[in-house]
Amino acid sequence: MDEKWGSYAFLLGVLIAILTAFITATWVPALLVLLGLIVGFLNIADKEVQSFLIAAVALIVAGSVSTSVGVIWAPLETILGNIMILVAPAAIIVALKAIYSLASK
Image (cartoon, rainbow, N blue to C red; front, side, top):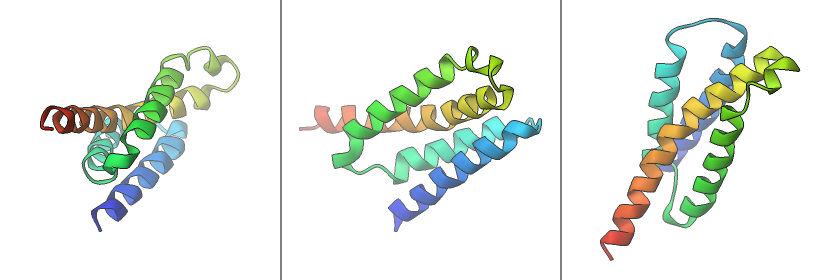
């Protein structure tokens, strides 16, 4: 059941990241961080940790270099930045859980 909530939080976060690229709202980053924390705590099973962290690094790097993409289409820069804000807290939580799991064995 918890994994479903985490999946819904991730999908909602991606949808918000895309839709809010066209508006200016100060509440968006806080909401994306909250959804990212939910994803990190509820959605990632032990067998998915490595794949998730690799994907998270790819998305964070894409969000970091998005300034060159903004020349092509400005909202894409905002979308990538928003996705980075969503994924970073989830990646931190999953990485900490993985380190704890390794240390406790």
